[in-house]
Length: 153
Image (cartoon, rainbow, N blue to C red; front, side, top):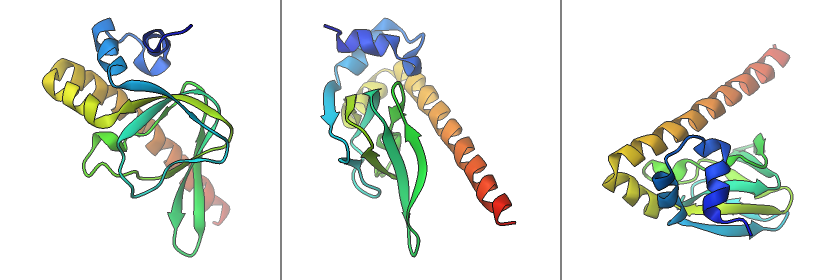
């Protein structure tokens, strides 16, 4: 049976991470399952976790007044869901819904923040990795906006 430590050590997001850092993450982690259609997180609610998606597809969207839900992107196997746990006020910035059955590893945000605070080298490593996710998602959103506004042009 595959262990959490082995799965995390092989995850692209944690590529080249020191084994002792991966052990710190494992200490805050657990396996979770969400059936298709289940809401994983809601915009504005407490963001107390993030997820390594092992299997399945997750739809991300935001709610816009007078327009309803606007799709942002779909996350799949080997993606990371959530960065809001890292920045105060620790509130989800989007909605996430399981498009298919989801198998994931949940990581408790408060647990990991405490470990980052106590080990600054570990904390810096985590911050760099999540900053990369933020940069990629910002670029993706930018390209979507360019498509929308050029089509209406």
